[in-house]
Image (cartoon, rainbow, N blue to C red; front, side):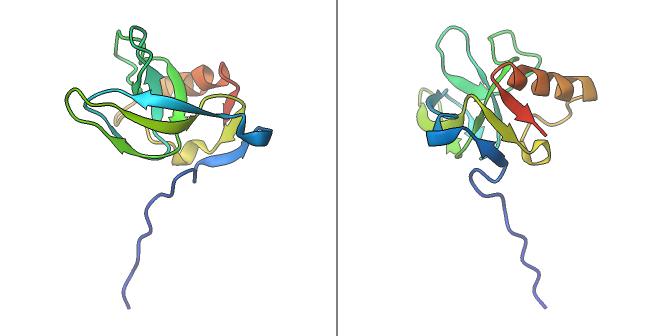
Length: 122
């Protein structure tokens, strides 16, 4: 019998959101990014664009600021517009995508950062 492994779906991580899709926002993904649904994003301070969250970065992306609803791949000098959860929602922490190798305190900080946006990680 063939085994089928189903991949992640857009918004699979989302447990609940505010009425009228108030939790969602249109954001711009910066250059050289591979974003999958459920990726934790940080916002670059200078440009306002979002990139994959990186706790070691000094560009503002070390603070978790949103969770991607859809995927995007950008190349050098290219950006992409996607929808993301930016406020007032509950998400499943087990289905979020983060940088590989994060420590327990770094993962806890993601939850704290997102709670500041009223995005509660369960």
